Length: 345
Image 1 (spheres, one colour):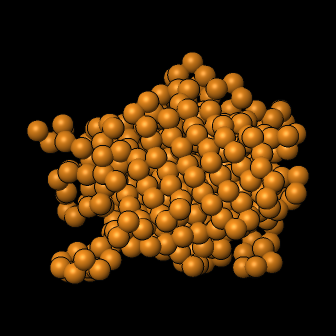
Image 2 (image 1 turned 120 degrees about the vertical axis):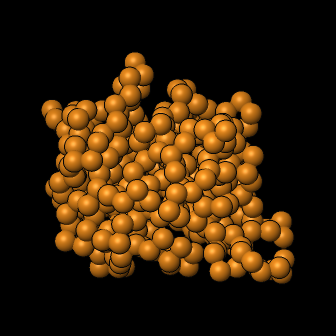
């Protein structure tokens, strides 16, 4: 029956994916029949009295025009990866990127579970549910494991997350907040034993962006009391919201999903990049049904230039979350796309 199939095998309606229950562990893996997919893990670490942020993202994209080619050299699937470390005390962002066609033991995105590899970078999940990642770069390295402390959050309606007014503007989307992170982080030859909290997102889609959307603003925040906050908006060129949504899961496990029109991002302070000249709101007031929060970057310059892989320049970095009384209640990542140039997936 249709409703018992993994998401990758769903029938399509008018060229678009249709909502259906997710099936695990299968849907932890890749969905090569969809056009775009990513596994995104971010977090805050402490080590030797210092604070760090990190992100590791693997992307998979299906190249439609090569699907019927018979050559084993045809680039049917491309795998990209981004990694970055925010050194808070050092006030610097270090980042790197990779790209390769799938195959030839260079790049792979497995379909049975999360098993991603791009040369010497990897992200994988064990049967126990523990994730681990290994990244080697000239300026930094990460060797981290992530242990779930809570069930995953199925975003939207049971994992089907609308991203615009048209039915096809949607994605399958789940999050794993409040991961216990531990392992090693190395910067400029110095190795740190680090621990903290992390957040994982996995999302896949055929058509994510409305034609009128130039980019998005997104937060994924681990609150100190065990709650988890997701909020996003897709943005028009004039800065107005085209679509919004998110969720809040309380410390006692109650999940609230935000319908369109219930999330509001209001810029509070802006920073201008010397690289791209883009102006980013690095502090926000974010109003949701779960309350109004202040999101503030720990470091203004957390802009990533990924033009050598995905072709985009975007801002993604460690940020703090405060409540309406100004108390710091959590930390996580803020992502802003489409400020330097229109985002094209």
